Length: 376
Image (cartoon, rainbow, N blue to C red; front, side, top):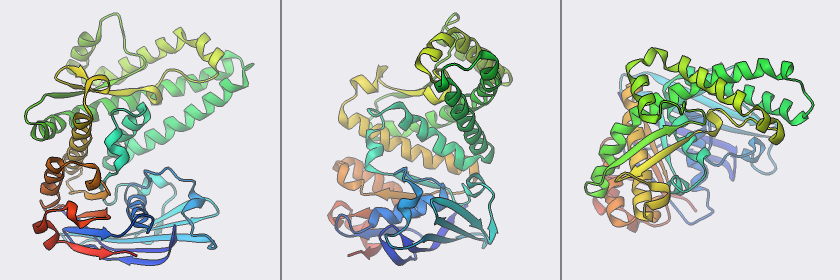
């Protein structure tokens, strides 16, 4: 099923006092020089679809200088005729959301109403950057396809902050930390289990997309945790988990608890939690070699593009809704073959909003069918 953004309105958001965009059902291109505010529009759409921003801003930064409050309003309609209105308001450094006129008690409840995939130049460096970028790539998908996933991630982050605060105090006894450790294990095992399953779901699509981009190279991705049972080895653990999916979360919890006991002294010395999904990673291998070490820049960019295209497939598969595709100035970062691959996907009935400084990066046929909005 398709859901299309019909109207986006910004009021005192970033550099915009007032701005209205009515995207096409196909491709909308925001054209203009650097620093005109093109990326701010992409960010606004992400904030009302995913309820997050790839910029990770202080929320007060979203309010235009001199204004007290920023508002982002979006109206979406499905091919079945239903309508969804989402309003984000930012005031006094806090966010509030309303969906179809009803205030949401938490940000989690507003996420995923209209699924979206966001692709920025920073995503092209996902392989070389720190592990939190790769963890975030999985969580971004999970939060959109499952409210339970979003709630679990929020709960884990809350417990982790509290446990770290106690560890930083230094003189807190084991009895005081123990309840938070138990909660960390329970939420951490559940989150890691869901991340593994989602990574497995992504893997098949990722391999297919990368194969097409690279001309036949093999790409594999795996989820790597900080508490894998070492005695049986990785292959044995994977085989056991596949055969006993119902026991996977319990086994994760047992292994995580064991590792926390083993590293208790180190955690005390470093005053932070060293075990848990907040320290996990994804491992990408091209032709059985670690992509972070051995892949060329071109291969790394192909992995990033393949991941985003796989996101589109997985979100649609799990939600039944085709995501909106948001592209912020990525054409300038891609070579001709990758631009062509991305353009082919853009033209396949996916509503897409993208920014650029130069229409020359696009196929003429694609631009001829697009809605071009010039910003100055």
